[in-house]
Image 1 (cartoon, rainbow, N blue to C red):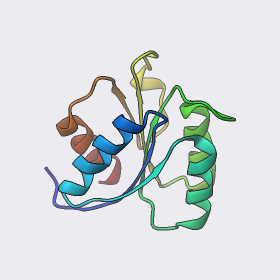
Image 2: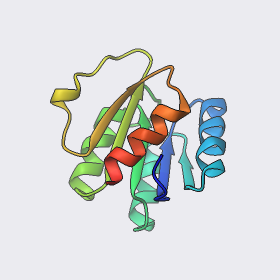
Image 3: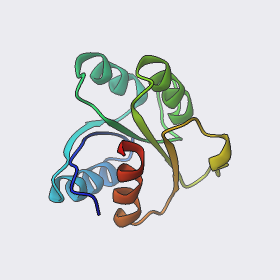
Image 4: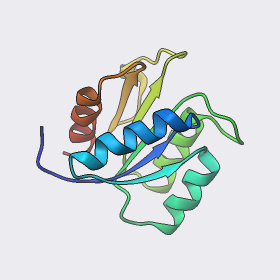
Length: 121
């Protein structure tokens, strides 16, 4: 595991998953922000230039899903690391933009930590 600590934005509409992931990331030293949907995430991204990683679920309520959010993030902040997760959709990692990782649900926190290291290195 890397010693680099990042500012991570979790975008997840299921509160229990969001809180558990937030706790796990904070426990190893990351600074964590949270959003329940893509609209909240966009507001945070506009107001916080220190965000380094967006970790988003694909299926969410709101004006856009996680894939649309990932495209917006890439357009707004091309250098940002993006991790996309889903228990319903299977994504081909070869079709994802640079600095984007797909992490299928259910995931182990150790796999999430490794994905953060990958998109921030």
